[in-house]
Length: 579
Ligand code: NOJ
View (cartoon, rainbow, N blue to C red):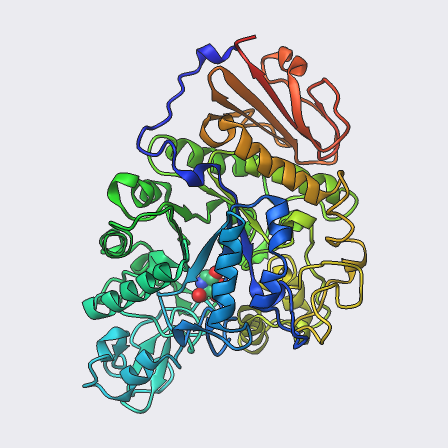
């Protein structure tokens, strides 16, 4: 087939958006670099690695929260939106980070956590002080269920479960009412129905933009609008509570709120900005609306469909093998749906997920090949790719020997609930949480083979993966065959070749159980991309054997002109019909 057979459509509304050819790198600061030896990563540590990031070639850094916070959920519980927590440094450090990034042509995305605050945020302190306080309505306060005594078991206003186990309500005896917390009790949910609260958030966002940040990654932003009657959800015998998600995932006013935010924060501002909404449970139909530039909501969303396929009933503690055909069907559907309007984000992992190579590749014998293959496949989709720190080194999951080695509130609370209320043994729970718990991705970045892995000279807040002696940046940055060097090449390809940023996407071989194959096209150029998701050699038939004669522009084995794929092999071919 020649490229002339392809109807290529590049929508005028978004063509030229700078982020189409950009790559974002996520820094989870607590685990990046510790400059002062207290065992926790910090902003001076990030500043010290700006040349590393620049050398890798990324365009944007997304910084997980560094705001003042009691750190109940590692900073996703903010007690002051306009200051830096002392464990990470100072506002002056943040200004230096912004300046250092800008000086190198990179941008900074702040994490924006406004579905909830910390219970130590002054807004909540005021809100809980009395029912008459003007900030009372900034959070969700409700009385106990009728007929139940406030504070007694089962008296919560509804049956919703919190994401971190237990009920989503906390009783507060100061006023005899409960407040809603979809996450920990130290993360009360903000009530976005209140217009004053919304204005205060927009003002804070403008303050950050005035300071020089280039946009926001918006934490669970599709939870902002709740059905105000807060109805019960379907009950779940496993957790003893109900699932309220249908009443707050993409709730009734969510598009209105995000449009209002966009109008109040970004409209009329000159510059190049980026907004990405983290949206668990978002459907592709909704994502089209959220990211349609004409609607002025967000530039792209983090969707979760492709990271739910290896879970039984969506339960991360019940992992199951991933079927490649389902992964292709899902990602392919998102590619197709957002081809004309809107834009995709692309990711394998982040600070809430397992390490990409352990989850989707082979972190044993084929670690290097499979880490590169995953990078090649993801980055050559249409959309903006996100790299999670250490992914560019092929860092792997960590084996935690005991629950005491864990630090994450989610896994600790689950372990407690499962062993005390659900009759599971410690060993059963540890085995169940091993593949997907969030601490896997939160072990320190492995910079070198020294004792603290170049992360810290002190006692790290969480264990360092013992494989740091083999898997580390120092051994990779100057090695042309390393995972790092491969990432560098695939990032450069997006910058240099418009077919990557702008070309149409066509999934091939949807039913093949081991091979991921697709074509990109921006006439007269087209690209064929192949990845073997197995250790078994594959002969690939894409209906056009002449592809083997095209230029192979990227691969993770010594190049050869065939459509055969060795274990976990990745190949990208490019040709132009004007030959
Ligand atoms: C999503 C964040 O990525 C996660 O780390 C956090 O625990 C929850 N939102 C709550 O803020």
